[in-house]
Length: 265
Image (cartoon, rainbow, N blue to C red; front, side, top):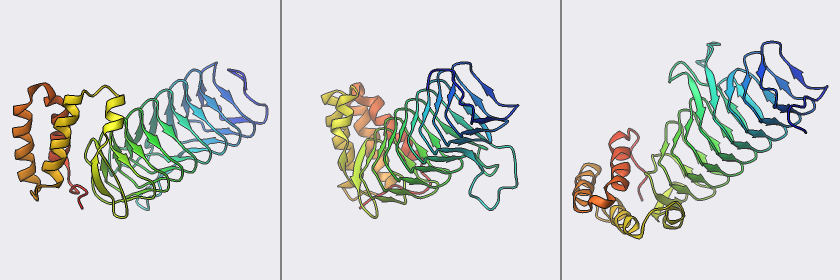
């Protein structure tokens, strides 16, 4: 559809606020508390409701359900929100729910994320930028995913799990504990096998960064250290490599904030 074209069969609630360049396809429904930014395309048969704010240049393909109430029995109709940034793609049958008052009250997605068909993003999930979530991935409530992470198709992520920046989860994985930044792996349960060297190289990490992060992986997974011992060893590694210290700091910050524990073999 052309920019700014609203199909005559679409139902737009009187309170909804759509930029003049938003297009809405046949039989889609936009609720009264929805705000949609410039250039966003809503395909046919979509439902966007709830207290939902959508930034510019997003694309919702047919049959998406965005801003539905949480699938949480504790929900009592509170006006919790869904906030979506700019330039995201939502393929067919994606569902994204609003937040709950038991958490921050908002589900959030950043910019330039690629969400493939049949993905479910539950209440209070916090997604960063440039994330790829493949077909039929199921995210439980309260999940945090860092920038540039990739989640392979048919994977299930347990509620409250955190996935670090640049991590890569292989298809059909079951993830029950936190996955630190930079790691790559798969399985039921998820098992890390190394760092995401290929992806990191594409995103500007230097060969020296990769060498230090490979050593960090060995500290975390090969030396039979508990988490506190691993954190101490990583701090020494960081001090020994000041040029690569920011990459190690990202890993240290994640480990120190983990409450579920990290996925380990």
